[in-house]
Length: 299
Image 1 (cartoon, rainbow, N blue to C red):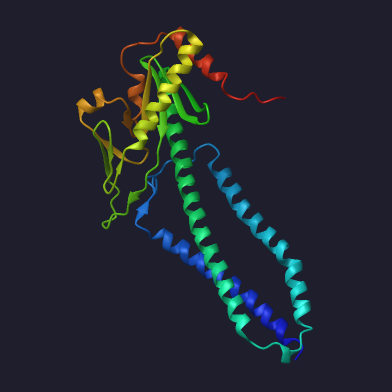
Image 2: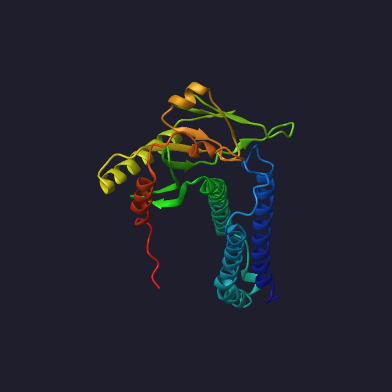
């Protein structure tokens, strides 16, 4: 009978592992059926630079964490099993303290579930944002063939500007946003966002902060270029919404402070069109002024 307490301990460990596996698999299955989807889901966006390597790094991190957990609990688990094997069965009787520890275990497990859901959603948002930025960058790179200069992830003061396009008609400070679409009951993905010059009206919510963020970043960039070049350079705030169809009137497009667009297909070609406002020499000066903000990689 000396082995009975240790078997109970192993059963408790197995039950905890089983409950964790059931919760994780169940939550992930439920997440796939939730009402919202990434705007780039099921689209043929191609392999953006580093996409497969980032996926491999993420998978490796999950595997590494699991390995660390096994190592962390290896000695305590075996030590506890060794100690419980020496507890006489007649002394191993349920009492009031057992329920206290059971409630404590349930509370700890519940806290872990809550934390898992919170971090899972944060990771999903980060993944959506990463893919949106890379897809936008890939589409903006097409402007190189039209004489534009394209820079990505420009370091600023406590933040980064996702993309900067230096074109003949102006310098564009491009902010990329990824908003999830509501899942259509008929399976269609033709959802549109309406921009009225101030707000983004999505099918089931309204966003007001993103255009303002794009404007603030453009104002910062304009100030930096003015200080670096000693003259005003036209900086145009732009907001990219990959995966969405942007609906706006011609009047809004011409008068709005922020250019809201979808970079898919030829959606960013407007940056390379129009009359020349910034000559070639000034564009090169802008490029040089911004290039120094990137960190230097030492040999």
